[in-house]
Image (cartoon, rainbow, N blue to C red):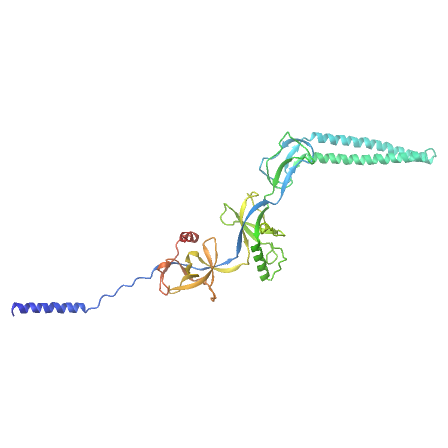
Length: 403
């Protein structure tokens, strides 16, 4: 063969190899793994609906300490602002003038008593003389009148002794209630009067128990009455009683407290709505507490329903589709499904109560899992790789997800 024939054979061979390579099958494409998402099981919890109000603390008893007798303050037996108990001595007046009055009245009793003894002897002698026909009727009556008068004076003077002893007792001024005492307005050396011009010495306020006052608006009040009617209860019952006639527990917290850590019970509601504010005043009583000062502002939480079972999910798991709310639920095969729900209350820990959507029997079973992180990578009816939730608290996650 010549050179031209050899070149043609080489071209044909190269063409055949190219055709053979082009007709072979391409390698298979690797499928992407399911996306990793964080899931969390729904939880069931017993909940009670509640309303929140703003209120204030007040003492259950307040006493203005005043002197009952006139005298000079000899000593003050307390420190301003300290806690005192009922019966503790607070002020002591100079007792000497009161003791002198007692001694004088006792001496007067003895004088009248001596005169009475003589009058009784004289009366007896006059009666004897009357029998002998010596004394007249007028003399008998005079002796009897004198004896009866002295008897009355002795009794009156004995009462005067008791009164003076009572004034001596009043010169020691004790605490009438237990609580926190204010400052001493009058100090040692000052003269105090009794009566209309008696000065204020100090005040005592009771701090245990302490009252929790707050105002309930008339809209809430009407709602509570409708709830009572729906439960078959009379609206004439006290508004401070529960369904079984027991006291309604409430919780409250100071501005510096987290949540509502302190407990009280409702014990009073006013008998009329204030037309100027449209509110009714309600009071709770907290017992066994310490460290509260009357007048402090507090946040009050009041239960308004009976306890019920509720399904809770993290609020960050809630998605929106126009006016509908739904969850992405992962079944036992790790496939994603949509579950429409209605929203209940948002709890303090970042959990949300979910209710069944219209026409559904149940919002979510307590053991079902919903996606809380990685929502954007999950697709309906496709599998995912579920992992445990992060350690980030629910309420922190909710705060970071909010716009």
